[in-house]
Amino acid sequence: MFNLFTRAVLVLALLFGILFAILMVVGYYFNWSIFTIILTTILIVGFQFYLSPYIIQLFYRIKWITLDDLPQVNRDFILNSCQRKRLKVPRLGIIDDGNPNAFTFGHFPSDARLVLTRGVLEKLSGEEVNSVIGHELGHIAHWDFVVMTIASLVPLIFYIIFITFVRARVGSRRGRGGGSALLIGLASYIFYILTQYIVLLLSRIREYYADEYSAKLTENPDLLSSSLVKIAYGLADSRGKSEDNKKFSDRLHAAKSLGIFDPTSARALALASAGGGGFTIDNMMNAMKWDLWNPWATVYELNSTHPLPAKRIRKLEEMAHKMGKPSAYDFKLQKPESFFDEFLADVFVKYLPIFAFLVIFILSLIFIPMYYYVNTLTLIGSSFGSALIITSIFSLLKTMFKYPAKNFPERKISSLLGEVKVSAIRPIPATIKGRIIGRGIPGLFWSEDMVLQDESGFIVIDYRQPLSILNLMFGLFVTEKLIGKDAIAEGWYRRSPTPHLEMYRITTDDKVRKGYIRGVRIFLGIFGVIIGLGIVGYVFL
Image 1 (cartoon, rainbow, N blue to C red):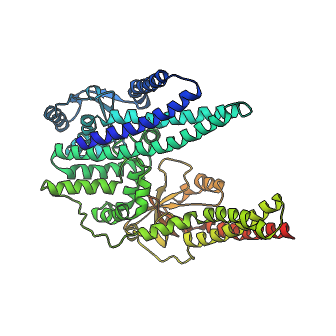
Image 2: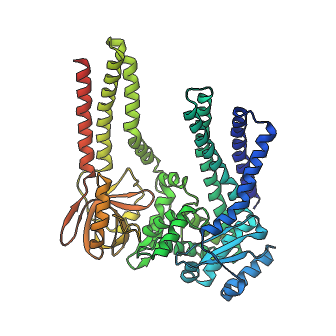
Image 3: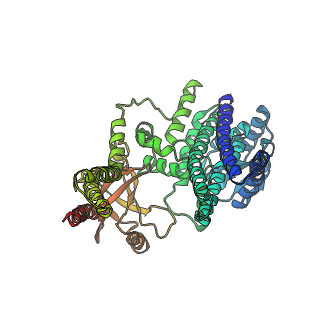
């Protein structure tokens, strides 16, 4: 508790220190007094803090209930837990939706609202529901939902300052102060990005502490682990959703920091650990190796409101061992190697074409005048042409790395999910035989992607063409016809972080359908080399 409080205070101090510094510059620009700057900061924070719970209540259709409306096992747990921890029983709400989730909000712990969805009560056992309630009570006891309400304001203010001063620059570009307005706007945008990541870090830290709080309340960390897995499967259900469920899902993504699970992480966990007959612990443990060992997983986690599911479940498993409790999950697998060299190679390949263009363009501007007397237009043209040649060559090399030759050995989905040396850049060519069971995004009628299932698991088939309109047309007129058919999918298996197979070719009983991304990228690379040579030749001849 002390560690979380200390971290929260430090993060808030950093956030508002940055905010105050920017407001000082803004105040200087508008000739504000220091009193005005401080008062403005306090008023902005206070106004947002007061309104945020009411905005959330408008955002969700919450039915407020009493303790008597809950099952006995949950009612007793809430009463006993609040009495033990000297907490006021929070106001309870239910959202009539099959998606399993829970969240807490309010001004202070004394007026906290704890909301469950119908899906939590339906998909989890009574004791598992208690573990979810315990997690939310942890947020209340730690005051972290209040901290998040305040902290999330800072990036918003920086973005507003950015928009305001960029417009001021546009409106006064011929007058005095236009350059200052632009500098303030750009600085605000940089701080907007920085503070976004700080808020996300704080959000992830608080989830670990709420998990620990739940484990101590229930005296069984494994309950929350199994709850997280079931909630993940509920959020990533691929069997279609009603229109109401889809609307709630959209709201869930819009305010995902509130829920017990980030929907994107939930989908990744579900896809990575579902066997042919449903969830299996062996599949999940096999798939979690990527989350725990591949450096790309940590990169993706930076943009998440919640820790990676594998890390949360591993922490709970460690707690279970310390408490002398049994655990369904065993993280005794030893990391065989670093995997950092592959990560560095992936980053190098990913950004090589852009880096090459900038380097060659700048070097050409410097060295061409040393050997040739050229005018400005010729210099820029020759530098651009040289950079285009090199960039196109490196783009071809990147394409060959990202889309290896057309040799796709047959694999089972479960074996692919256990691969660690894979990323969005580094694929594993594979052929998967199975049945198409649904769309990539449940309920989205134009979703072109498909979910393919074999006897060992299921995976998203990423249908991708060079033009987005082709993807849309496929989703509107073809995908639905393929659902329920046996298929052979050939392509490149990737994780980013959700595991998927980027399609090269998919064969059903009636037709073979291909993707042309690889061919088009090779063509564009060759075309870029030719155009670059043409520009350089034209400039010097």
